Amino acid sequence: MTTRSAHAKAAGRGDLFNSQCPTRQLLDRIGTKWTSMAVKVLAQADPDEVRFAELRRRMPGVSQKMLSVTLHNLTRDGLVARRVEPTVPPRVHYRLTELGLSLEVPLAALRTWAEDHMAEINRAVAAGDAQAGPTAE
Image 1: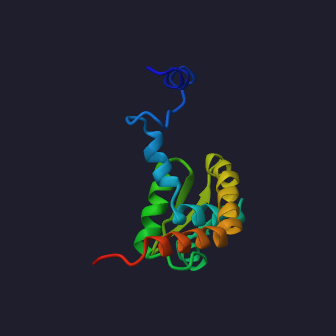
Image 2 (image 1 turned 180 degrees about the vertical axis):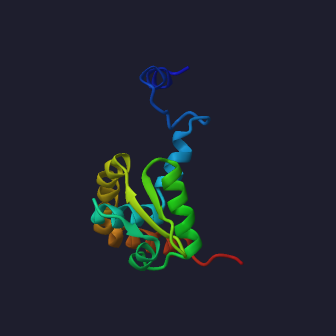
Image 3 (image 1 turned 90 degrees about the vertical axis):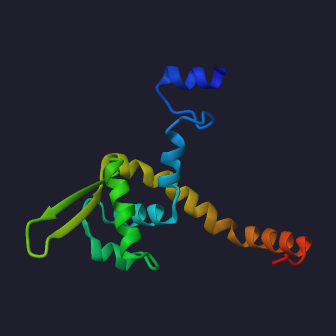
């Protein structure tokens, strides 16, 4: 076991460099654009809840299925709380848990970084594509 792995295990933390560590799967789930958008919308509503239809309206481009999968994963991970009103049809409300609220700060920093550097990234991609030339199909 490497020193990094031993330290992570002793601290009860994940180790991204260990192929068996669930940290990788968690990063896959929280690193999506839909997760970032849902967390932002819910954080802006805090402490209020947001209904499914309102979330979908405030997240342009998300399909009903993708939003449902995203919310299911966030709820399963303990980041979002779901409340169902027993009406016909049922009214479903979502809000961030304390754990979910703690995710907003790092996701906001990542969103800001992406927005601040998108033009630079686009220039690098264009330059790389120009150097690579046409691709064979």
